[in-house]
Length: 292
Image (cartoon, rainbow, N blue to C red; front, side, top):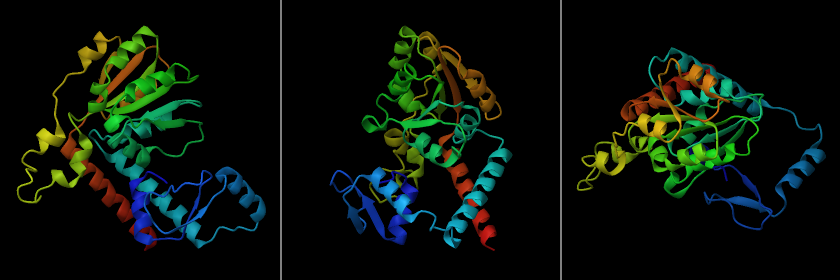
């Protein structure tokens, strides 16, 4: 089942006919939507269907509508990002897509990084391997896993990670120093758990007596105020504080260099929510205009 929340919400809202191909004889449909289960090997089934259908399938209006919508949203997103003059947490993935070479490995931390990857990493003709490590509570060992993959990767490895996950796995930098590992780490530092700012507990009007949002920062925001620069340097990495204007150039310069390059982008959690909602409105307008 896709882990993308928007896809899951779309399936729950539209309730389409759902066919699940499961070669292990299990029940891999976490949404519990009505489904037909085909107990067969998925790749073999897809190949057999393609061969059976041959050239009989033609693109119809439904496919064209989706392609048109995708193009309209892409244009709106690119224009919105180009007009922005402040840090935005999704910008790193657009910059990485333009810079990563064939064979590169791109890791995304959990919470907001993997969601921004979902929205901002465009299609590219280059063969980029995209990975994510869930870990305990979404933060355990993310940096270590990405650096571990750099030990065997034949091309540059990049990781986009939040500050809480990064601080939780600082000892990974020492391992990288001891084993001569190299990677580009884009550290999105919003001084806490940014994803919770999108959730109901951050909003006013929570149920009486819940303790929120009065205690939101203490329980969910968890600001730490840590300056990571001296820590990164002490553990053998290179640190660079980058802005929205030079994040792309900094990524380009860091890829393939020996050692761990930490590019820190500082953002504001509350402002990040506003920017994501502004972007959602811009894409909605683009879709409406395209259907007019």
